[in-house]
Image (cartoon, rainbow, N blue to C red; front, top):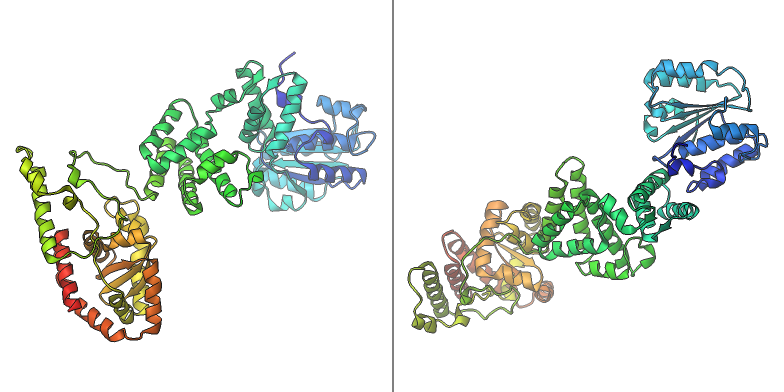
Length: 589
């Protein structure tokens, strides 16, 4: 006897055997019991959800001698139906016979009464594949069908079926079967077959089936053939190129801290046969379940992750950052549909995740820097304002350090290192110092319309800068900042303390000025204040007592000196700081 595949052996022959379509089964059974049978039915739904099986059971039940709403499987009609040779049950594949001649041939004997059963049942599978002329021929019959004829039309693409045909049918939409229902059905089959299995393997197959019972049984049979009549989770992953949750978490962690490590892991998995598109879908599901877990630790809603895994992913960032990561993965997944380079799409998504952290992963090979050139993290408490003598001294020291670094042919002299202490040559963030009275003057000069125009010029430019190496630092500095006030020559930003120190750093402030001028067409100097200063300044603005006159004087004097400080592009940061300090001295006089 020829071998029969699992989905054919365990195809349901009774309504009681159908899983995942309880509402449809109950409705059809009641229609049979109450003898309220329509002339035409339209079964719609994804592949493998039971449309054709239910159609055959329904055809057998309406012709069963007992007419009890369920095939008895003992009468002549039921036996003929099970053997597939019932003369009154006609199956027609519209995908193979879509021409009008074929449909006319099938419908040629429709006027003759049933020879064995009570009804003639025409089961037309993939009805949406009929040609226009064939569909029109079918429509003519549906308009005035004989009383002894029942049409059951099945399709996976109902929108392609003529609306006039749909309007003459009772429509039943078959939904995807839940994974746990598929898993229970497979457990029953394996127990009946006497096959050992791992529950995690069945859960994985149910997930791969995507709601189709037939697909699940096909995958199960393939895995059993591979694993020699026993089912293991590792075998399922090996056949279908799946990754573990731990591997997925490792990729997402590396994407936030080391893009090179993340890409290395993905490439190793690709070489081992992992399906990149499936990996991308799994990463999205991991982030989705992490976001679900973040809402009051809802473990009951998690299907893939347990509490330790969800907690590990939750440490990667806040909800907004996790949503941004999932957006990058969704974009990569969408691109894989139109590109053969699925690996490149995922790698770019990982690089975008790294860029979102604010630390540029691109590094250029340079010579080892001396200890005095090591960068200091932004966010240290700002130093007090420099005096003019200290500014000139720092400039001389930096010039000497650059000459020493560039002149590689001459070794450094020991006495030269003694003259310049290390702590003086470190680049500490020197902030431009203003007082709140000056900023109050900016607010008094500011106008709401000017602020709106400034916002419209600056902030729409920032998203593109996020992926430009040269301008990413301006994106990171301004993306969360708010414009508190904008006058004719000055912008006041309100932001956090770390970003405030960066914006007020004279070297960065000078670069920011030219960025706003060239990229955003905003020719204004700017400064930033932190949350506490913002609150205090707003209180001052509301009272305005003893402040307006002094504030106006400071702003007017500053505006007179603004162009002299910002105009020369070749001015280095120390010269820029010196010029700004000269302005401050004049303003305070």
